[in-house]
Picture (cartoon, one colour):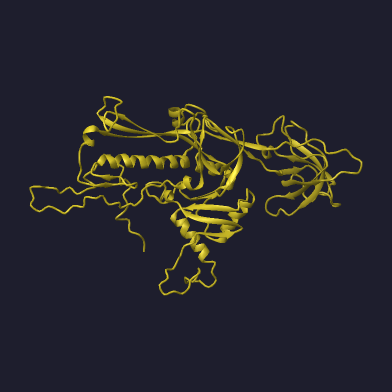
Length: 483
């Protein structure tokens, strides 16, 4: 059994500028003595049609007075090098090790060298399948600053010498240091590693226009709106819907925005202002999905439907910021998958519905849903209307997103405007504003109707504008669940 394809859902339920015959009763023939009963009040068959709520729940808004927003995020405190290879054969007491340039970001240059110094003790382990060979050693010759290839010499603690063969790819990390009696101190020092990110605001606009004549025309349909708009003037509904649609775009633009790629049509059409990293022009911005997809964690190929899959997510979070509390914003199918996974943990509920806390009341309603669970970390589940709405991301297969894990709380970053470290939510919106201009949410009326006296246009035009960008701090703590 399955849901029939018809009747389906209307993908354009209300985006028209006027009442159309396809949406309303048309058999008003007043020469016919039999007139139909009419329901004047508009029926809200789609309920609350807005989808904006996500950023209001997890983020904050704050002003910015620049075309470019930059922030710094801490690098790792400890360093591990991968793909390192020894020159000596197995059994040697020491060996020269090569550290590939891929371990350095940016690419190794004149002022960059490996963080290994003489006297530091290291752990060496082979990589890949069967990677069980290990050595511990002490660095006897450090890297040469500015060298094209970074090399260090390591002497082993084991009498058997080097356990791995020459050129075997290995991982090296520092665990301490050891010096002989009466020797000088550590040579050299390491600088802190900060990673710098940036984003730019985009200008979002919309407009609603109605002629003065239509404003004076009464309708037989009594319109209703989500915020209490009512009456028999159709333009009130259209203007109100335009406002709601614009408010949704303020959020969805922050979710979906991408920087214009080099040579793209958007870079030619919109290329002005300051460019973000990776873009040739000032077109576009880095939305949440773009940032998490490129700098965060991605769970692909469907939803995690068992504890083993969630364990892989938890193990990845262990390697990142290890944020204690996280919220997963999910579509309906992902919500069901989490419910089924948690229900399956009840050993007495195989094939039944005994999970949960019930008092055996004959009038009880069986609750088949869960709001959260704890496994290593606290995970809370929240339905995300944006991912379910068929006129937005609901039902997408190619490029479909099933959920987004967002860490709860805030992080400390350096704020350029304040000139000091400040607490910021992991997700927050920066809008353009100064002492004389606030572009968070601007709306104004032009024309010569509806109270406006700005031009000879026999119409009322309601204009909407905002200039904003979203800052995704600590993207390595986010998880994107996609098809």
